[in-house]
Image (cartoon, rainbow, N blue to C red; front, side):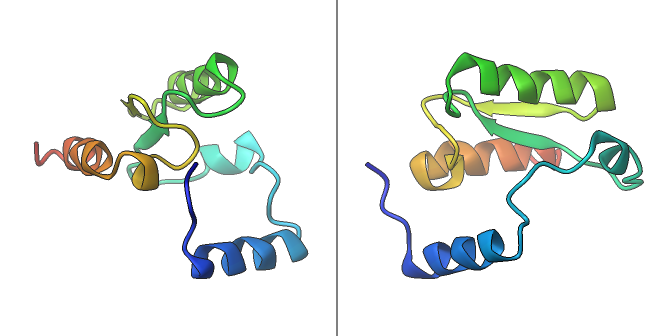
Amino acid sequence: MVLLHPGVKRTMRQVAKVGLTGSIPEGDLAKISMPVALIWGRRDPPGPRRSASGERLSARLGWPIRMVEDAGHLPHVEQPEAFVDALRAALGRD
């Protein structure tokens, strides 16, 4: 079980109130002009289907993806060292 910092819980409640919990339309994502890399938990619920969606998004938009093994939706909380390694790799600092 992952315990979230109270500030994270408070922020998530606020995000939910204003309706920002849905996905961003792919057309809007495609308009992003700066470099983007995805860092994705391999076990992001609901299992392989969700992690596959990160891989599909990566392929469609040409964004590199770094998978964090043994992590779900919160790889930075669940596997912080592996997350930092993935972030360093994404920044070209590995």
